[in-house]
Length: 155
View: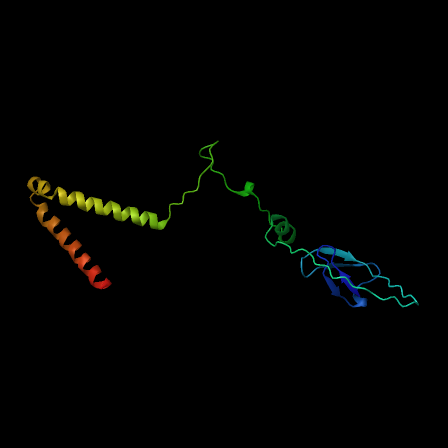
């Protein structure tokens, strides 16, 4: 027996004994549509009728539409499912495009500016706090060693 899906018109071959007189629940293997199939009575005529088959091109289904996902998988996809920010009622929350690398760049700019300010005020700090001279000189030695290491690694 030839069974055609009501939704996507895909055809399947099913043994005649599989479909009883009371009908049987079947499911399309392509789109997942379910229906009750009853046996098809075929009338055989004595006259020979030439069958002309017309090829139908069915439209392609978009498998990612919210309607299809709800019908096939039971998923509800709409904008009302998103969690809303309840801390500020009446205001919509904007998503920030401030990613990881933006934070890294800001960190380097901040550290560079702090070392620049320290370099400019090094003499004033040493005059006010003479014991800090050793620590400041060690800090700039470490920075020079890191700079040399990076230059050697690149070359």
